[in-house]
Image (cartoon, rainbow, N blue to C red; front, side):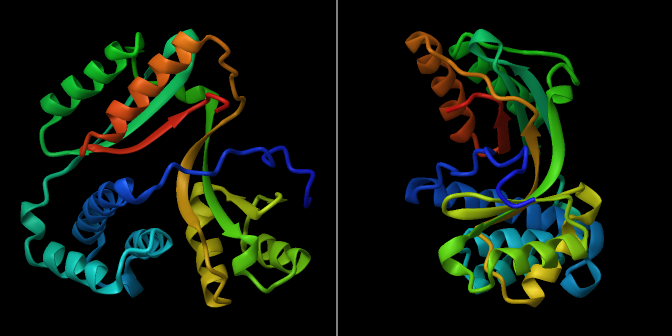
Amino acid sequence: MSGHSKFANIKHKKEKNDAAKGKMFTIIGKEIAIAVKEGGPDPANNSKLRDVIAKAKANNMPNDTIDRGIKKAAGDANSVNYEVITYEGYGPSGIAIIVDTLTDNKNRTAANVKHAFSKGNGNVGTPGCVSYMFDKKGQIIIDKEEVEMDADELMMLALDAGAEDFAEEEDSFTILTAPDDFSAVREALEAENIPMMEAQVEMIPQNYVDLTNEEDIKNLNKILELLDDDDDVQEVYHNWNE
């Protein structure tokens, strides 16, 4: 499979600079709160919380910050009233965009998301209007420089744990799983002390779209920047071939 995966060209270089780190910690803090409310504060008995903790560590969130978030959520679980809402729509030239949000005020969030789309000449559509163009997959990215295990051994470890696909790229390995198998594969890698740059369930485009018009690129970037700046927005997925 190595090197021949149809997923080998997945874009995985996230725009995670220092300015985005605070936003990422806010996102993960909300996810911790939701996971604790749904399954309790003990990661041993809460697979969703284990996944969020793994995501936190992949984003270099300090352990004491993670622990504080869990204790805070356990202490006031009844006050956690975030609602998960997903928006779908189109950017310039029909670029498909999915926006996952966690909000305590859906009217505010809806207004902000619509504002972001309209500012970039896009529009919010109906549920399902673009999600059929994406596959929901667990995705784990491993930096080649951070892992001592050779590619074939790592591939067999992932596949034996339930992974669907393994791709070797220039500077990284990409492992894909069905959403239900994600936790098992991630935990198998964790048990072997394999460091993960990224580990989460994502919406992965079936095909990517090129943009050549400078105005379209400018408008799409405007939409994405406004969404990234919104504290209610957890994840943004699109099929633009950046």
